[in-house]
Image (cartoon, rainbow, N blue to C red; front, top):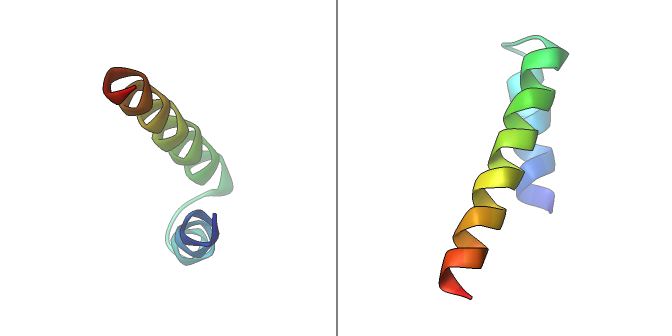
Length: 39
């Protein structure tokens, strides 16, 4: 969503694109795991 994009652009100023991409993938994985546990 927009929050992810905002974090992406904000973090680009401080970190490398590779690190940002890995963080986004990690957040997506955590979100999936939480959704499975709740569901």
